Amino acid sequence: MIFWIVCTVMTVAVTVLMVTPLLRPQDVGDDNPDIAIYRAQLAEIDRDLERDLLAPDEAERARAEVARRLLAANKTAKAPDAAGTPTRWLSAVIGVAMLGLGFGTYWAIGAPGYPDLPLQARLAASEEMRLNRPSQDALEAVAPAPPPVDVPDDYREAIDQLRIIAPNRPDDLEAWSRLAFHEVELRNYAGAADAQAQVIAIKGDGAEVADLQRLLDLKVVAAGGLVSPEAEEVIGQVFEKDEQNIAARYYLGALYNQTDRPDLALRLWRGIIETGDPNNFHIASARAQVSDAAFRAGVEYAVPEARGPSFEQMDAAQDMSPEDRQAMIGGMVSGLASRLANEGGPAQDWARLIRAYGVLGDQEAARMVWTEAQQVFVSSMRGMEILTNAARDAGVLEE
Image (cartoon, rainbow, N blue to C red; front, side, top):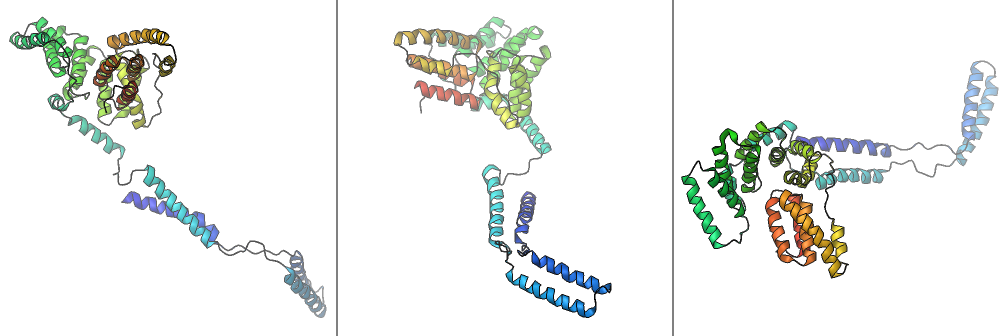
């Protein structure tokens, strides 16, 4: 309420300052210059009379003559073309326009009804959001189910057997390592995270950064892209071994971004984006989300250019002969697909691969890449937008 009172008072004050000069009547000047001369002559006659330079009768005759000429001059004087009356209608129009423009603009681009959010209150709300966010188990329970994987029945039976064997061998590093690997192959990320946690427990102090980083990846993927308190603990463990670890810095930035601190997320992500390999999976994920974080933080930030075949190259290939197009895109696709499979990449590169398969007419491959990319960028609004457009262009989006 105080906000609206202050805005109203300030808007009315500015409006009054602008229209007040229009309400004042304008002085009407004299168009006949003789009037000023005759008035000066009358004043001069009075001064001469006071100094005894004129006799009273002479002064009276002179005053009468000048007064006669002044009356004649007044009759021939013309008022200025612009009347000196107050422009009340114009003032009213300007006043209404000012009030309408001020409040209308705020209603259109402002946030009517939104409560005051001072900096300290926002920081406190962000910290409360971070402290009270759901646990890993709660996030896994509501995470979207991954797409089914088509594998032979005997493979599934073998993994089912491994799931029975491993718990009975709590110190069998090979069994738990294999289980973690195969759970990922079956897209059972929660099970893979549990198995990887057991791997780290078996290794104890011998666990390497790569082991912790793999557990961190699995926990976040299993939670639908959100960083749980349990995942945050793993981030701390990674930092204890490697303060500059890219994966940990990415996921810590993701945590800040998910708890309304895009400013801190931007600070962390810029550090890895501008100094690291853009083909690194975690850096690519940061690239896909950093523009949105920068916008929310009120910072203008241009994401550095990433290498890879452009959309224009894909479009140009459509005008080639089938043989030339096949050769050109085939070479690009093989290199791009290999890089994404081994190193990952930003959403733009996944989108290029989807479109490339679409141009080649390989709908099945495009659909497989589209499905895999959704799992990678499930937590990135901007990344999913880029991928969705590519899948639509390739004709594999089911709407």
